[in-house]
Image 1 (cartoon, rainbow, N blue to C red):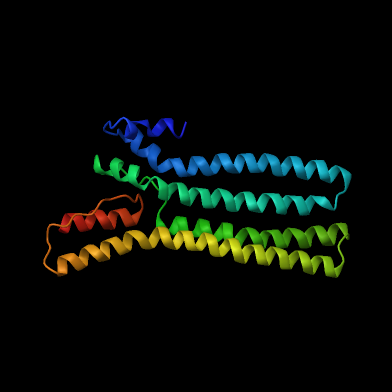
Image 2 (image 1 turned 90 degrees about the vertical axis):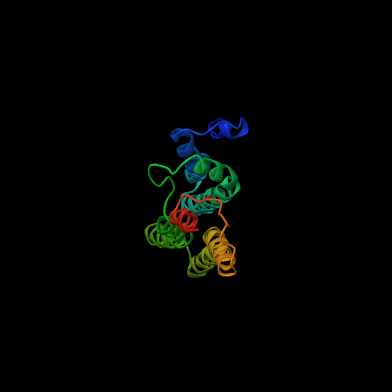
Length: 209
């Protein structure tokens, strides 16, 4: 469905408002499908191993679920970056009636929630299961917390780097264009490829130039 909704770009047809909307919703659709698949796998593994031993429930719930969330988030950002040429074509056809992508604040808060909030929730659930089931020694609990913290550091850094990259690229392009104007080149024009406030910044520069 996602590929089919982008067929207009392959066929070089002018995009409709629905086509514009599909371009900016494509990353979310990819992430949702990945979350669904990982969610089903997490539930199945947690239930199957939990039937044999209740101690496996928190382990598989987090060990399978957290990587799935990280993978889905990373795929969202990578898909958004990969579709920038098509997004540029969609925005060239005309200004969208409303913002079609999550804003910078929404994108940042989502990455924070998934890279920091989920690991903290995992530690909380680990503590709850440890207290209720009484099946973890102090050493086992400490090791589990250390593993979660290490995973959060690694994947949190990766997700934040991707986020910073997505935000910094349009800003650098606008800064480069401003430098050209400063040097006397008043004919420069930017390709608008971002559906957030950064795209509005690019479009605003074109209006001024």
